[in-house]
Length: 121
Image (cartoon, rainbow, N blue to C red; front, top):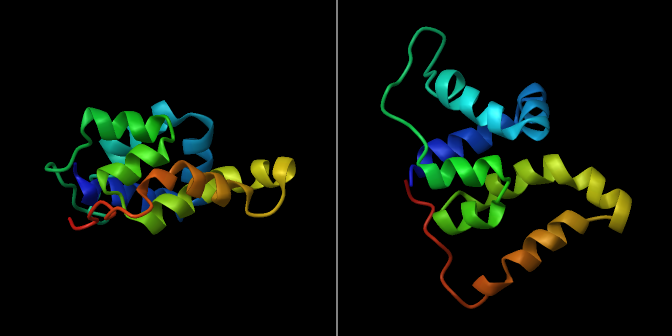
């Protein structure tokens, strides 16, 4: 897993309201666009050619599969905050405050008592 590149995606998208909207509405196309033109950008003048998502990472991002991302070693906080940005409001309308965070924790319950996956890059 390219933890760096997945974490860069989570960080970048979560901090840009337009990116987050596009990722929420059309994840498949946005992940492809990000991987081809946004992610490789190092600065305004330079592009990288060495980073890419594995198929497993790409599918987890497309499917908003935060459990798989966690298990692959995506940074816990980055993983949580981007999906709060996507799901917090709809979940809160249905189930009240912290509803998404509670679901996130419940879906990761099988990790209680185990060592979490390393987030080292």
